[in-house]
Length: 184
Image 1 (tube, rainbow, N blue to C red):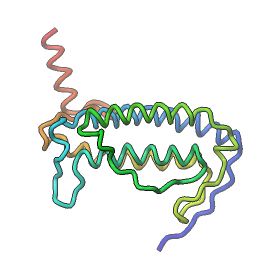
Image 2 (tube, rainbow, N blue to C red):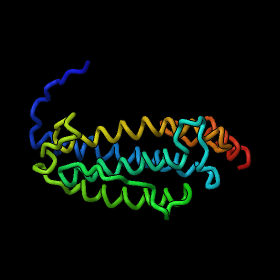
Image 3 (cartoon, rainbow, N blue to C red):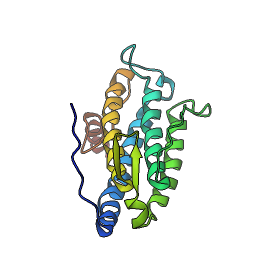
């Protein structure tokens, strides 16, 4: 059983602070990390899935990238569009998806950075479950991406890939650093 916690009304200066002081820097950093995880998927291993009910690596990476764009679009438009977003036929591997993700993220990020406080404060409905100021959905997308990126990072070693650093060194990035220091 869930219950709704009433949210205090956000003031314009608070919306501006959330956007510029919290969410945009976090989105930029998390995008960098997510991109490194997608790039780490070997181009020929996008079909890897750890279990029969799991998404393939490429499908999970697409879910992360496309959901980020869906939420950013909702913040920009002031409403959600839940039309299907299938993996485009042009995306055949992690390299293609990395390019798509980078291009789309940058254009969305630039537009979001220019939103007015009025646009940030517009109440946006999410499937009748939440009715929140648009700016608050940027927090949702951050949590969503971190969650699924953690899943995707667990696919990498079984695929024979290296796990990149996320919030500090990973085993693989530490090994690469040590090897580089020894060869210098």
